[in-house]
Length: 93
Image (cartoon, rainbow, N blue to C red):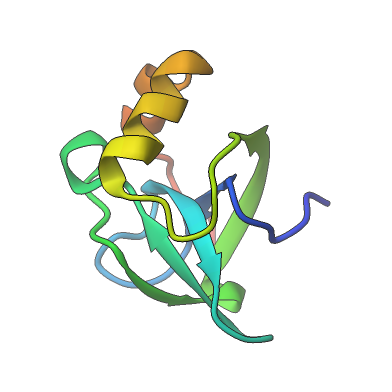
């Protein structure tokens, strides 16, 4: 299983953004992380998320902690993952 770390791309499994991909931009504590889509890419707003509601993928981008949405978008573009971020996943509960 992929680790919860800064730059890891995850799929949200709960809430109104379930099925959408996001990027971990900061670790808050042992239960919460700060994620972003960015909103104009995958529809996920920058917000705190419970790690139990995230499914990590094998993809990871190189960003600094608390990177801006523009920096995240640029890193996704450089890694060739921008189109992959726009896909919405079907979540099996």
